[in-house]
Image 1 (tube, rainbow, N blue to C red):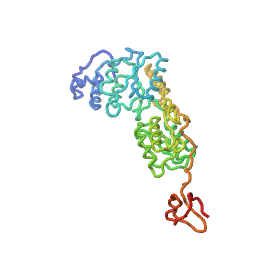
Image 2: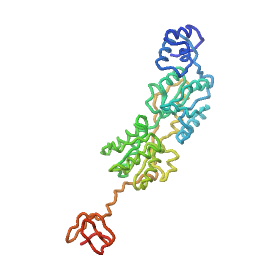
Image 3: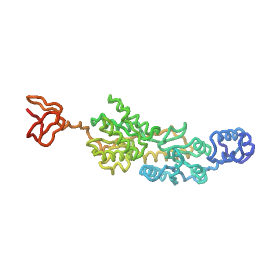
Image 4: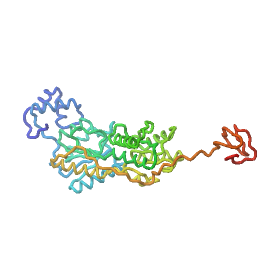
Amino acid sequence: MVRTGSVAGPTLAVVAREAGVSVPTASKVVNGREDVAPETRRRVTEALDRLGYVRRPRFDAVKSPGLVDLVVHSLENSWSGSILHGVEEAAHDAGLEVVVSAGLTRTRGGRPERGWLDKLSTRGSSGVLFNLSELTASQYAWLDQHRIPFVLIDPVLEPPPGVVSVGAANWHGGVTATEHLLSLGHERIAVIAGYRRKMCSTARVAGYRSALAAAGLRHRPEYLRYGNFDESAAHRRMLELLDLPEPPTAVFVCSDRMALGAYRALAERGLSVPDDVSVVGFDDLPEAHWASPALTTVRQPLAEMAATAMRLLVRMMAGEQPEGTRTELSTRLVVRASTAPHRPAPPSRGVERIAGTGRIEEAARIEGAGRIEGAGRIEGVGRVGRIE
């Protein structure tokens, strides 16, 4: 519990002694600094509450009621552009200004750098939207301690209990993509997923497997590859799939950017989309329209997800609590030109069988004037099809 009011009661030195830490360390906890181990922070916080130490959080929602923060991994891709568009529209409707922070995830694991949350409290924002890889336990604790309302947009991992998040119906999207390929007669359907542990990735793969099972098809482990939502990695995974003894005739790629990598791999092997291999993506980013052929994909409503998160944050800033902690928006299939009915491979054009008064076996090769190796010699034959 965080208490507010006038500074009274036990001193910080007493709290530090009770928690078994130095006064500077106790001060870091009181002031919301991030560079404190979670266990140490817990001991100091418990001592503060036990002794009745009263402090005023550095964050004050009254300071800047019209300011919210949006923290994204990067602004260098169309994904973040869609998120920003949705946040800005909803913020405008609510009369709020948005501060956008990007490139804060240089630390391992895609987490904000140390000290960034301190800047947040200094800025006096009334709430935060996160579209990052993940937050640490200490960062969640910091936000809770300073009573800063926040919402996660498409979180990587399952958020802690009570944390509000907005995402898409990824499982249903995986089902829809796979059912579309099945309806076109494809059975050898592969999937290039994102990260193994990311929530959206595992849900899309689960939907793919569910659709195969419903069609009475066995999931083939060799048809599951992970491209980590990276175009170059997806290119390599597609080449691996094409090298299989039975390569797929269709592939569900769990992001549009990865689908572009798959396109490149297919082109390098002289294969055509969709004549040789059908491809379905996921997201419906602008790249899906620009691709050649235009990409069939599952539309993920990114701007709507961001706007929904913004509206939830506004309610939380006003003291309301959402009815649930997870909000999922529906996905839908957008059919373009990258998928087509499965066409069985044409029969071999070589000499498979020659019948007549006698039988010629193992006609392996036809040369020049009609020499058939392994089957004697036939004079004056330029093309052999059937000899009677």
